Length: 264
Image 1 (cartoon, rainbow, N blue to C red):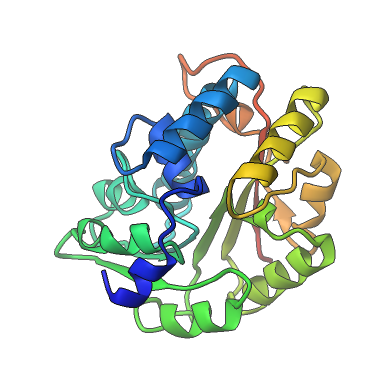
Image 2: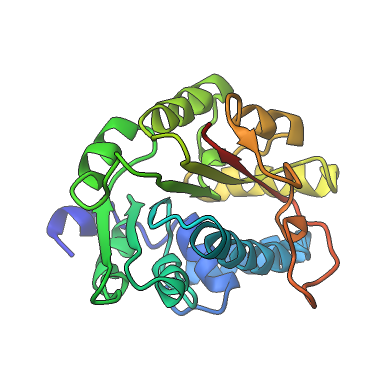
């Protein structure tokens, strides 16, 4: 970690990437993250179910891309801290030649880049520092590893809700999608207040007072608008626990909605 990265790392303020790492049983977090995580779980007990369901959705959607649709390239923006079943591990277990590029802007995540860069010999796994608010820079850097002349699956899991302005979020997503060829896919998982509205508002308020970056939950209808111009894959925008669940997956609704769209 460079001096500049260290200067950015404020361990006294809870950070979303470290919080999710804590909820998923990881060790790459600090006391502030654990305290905030415990308080959020006390106020909103289903948050642990949400974290687990979101991770399970990641595995299912990567299998959908690689095994069912033959997609050989994935751009994972907002990857967060590595834990079990990272995108490249799931993808390259199916097709070792899959190329995966991770994007994040958190300094602690940067220190774990080496762990992320242990993909298969046949494929490519890369990590770039980037911010979703600057999609052009992400696309430029990702182009060193990915071939944008062939279909790419872009995953935005738990990151779009950090862009507070709705139209700005739509603009960022449009810029990413415009750079993709036909047959590419966009996946979004996004905090939603259509379920347990009072608890959802409480958690957003608590987080925005104590944590970083600030968050906004949106409705399922708003999230669906992020897929304008794309073919929304069944079952549409649903709680991530309801998107093509595997046998034995928990029969629950969570406040993390997701959807998958294909570019015609």
